[in-house]
Length: 187
Length: 187
Image (cartoon, rainbow over all chains, first blue to last red; front, side, top):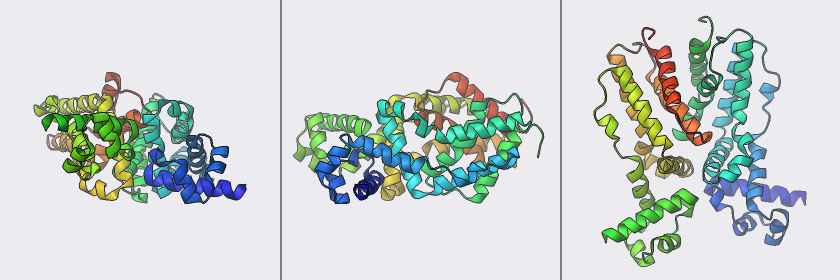
């Protein structure tokens, strides 16, 4: 049973990566995984639930580097940006993110149930910004939404829309730009 | 012939919006448009070319408001942001953008041939930033890529990932934030 589940998960990931959610049919899953259609139907009556399992497995892995985030808020921001860049540079992670964004766009019901997956990067960034504000690094009057967008959106755009990998230079540039805009005193 | 072409284009748009590129099959196109499969095959041997025609028709409409852009660079930036927000708020435009981003991600060959479509918003923004720098509004030492990302990416993230419409308040906030970060003198 565990081997079947793993085979079907792997097949789902491969099909999602190649075709997106529209490509996830039971016929294809059976072909790619070698597991019988009846077994697949029995465990996942709705293949979209299988997709969710597979996607969340990839997207919601807690990064080691953030389990022990640096105390100093400027270093915490840098650690966050490095980790975010590393995830986005990962081919599987980025593909799954594109898949979820597209799926959520076309299927508001899916979007409502899985907002937390899409909001994951956002809520991590929110914590870093909030902690930095509490510690006095960022100005007390900053708009949290604006600050979080400035942290999260440029790399997402660079990687998913422009399909350019994020370099350590990009990370340092965004970090410096963010501090120049939101820090109480110049660095 | 013109009526057939229009019917097939409309069908393509509807199918792309509902299913993405994976949903664009000749069978479905014939069903939705009422045009025969043989006619569709004859005109568009590759349905992906049809998709490109339909998508570009939506995405590359020159906005009236930018044909006569304001001379003053701060107003030009505001006009750009308003127009960009208006496009992104349009359901069809946003859906086509998600479709293209996802398609380009999965199909590097398509991406290479149609980079200009995805880079369209970017090159408009680049012009506004470059003009503003030449006119002395923005600091002479700003990194153009960084500035363009700061213009383009937050609304894209808000609209395509968070699925939130962009308000005039959002436009003014981004405009003010951009000037605060990149202008030579505080407003």
